[in-house]
Length: 145
Image (tube, rainbow, N blue to C red; front, top):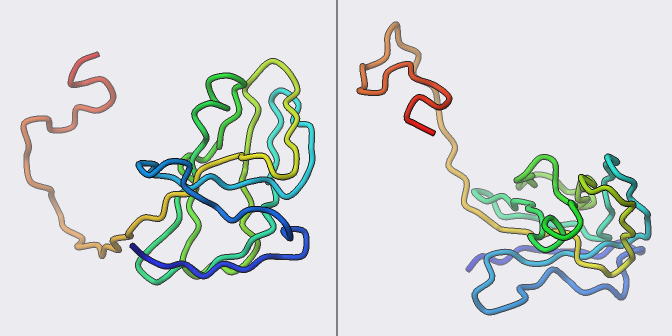
């Protein structure tokens, strides 16, 4: 378990901190700190009223809530979104309405999941040629349906 520092902004007062809904949950539910009506096709960066200090070597992935996606078409367009360890601004959740009806988001409503994850950083070794594999250059759909 890692520990992440979290601070409330004035418009986040009185709201619950992100939390796991069940003991087996992978993601913590995070709530909206604002009211808005999201029209079909509309995107909005929803305020949470929170700032975080993620430890070096970690990120927080932002993922949609499956119930909102299935029942209303509400998703996170850059899934998974990434909050980097050196970001110190307000945590905002970019949501999109893929549904056919306007979707009301109200203060205190769960809007997404946050999943802390370890990050592996890489370096590049530039070469003239790559090794051969059975798949080779076969791209999209090359291994079957």
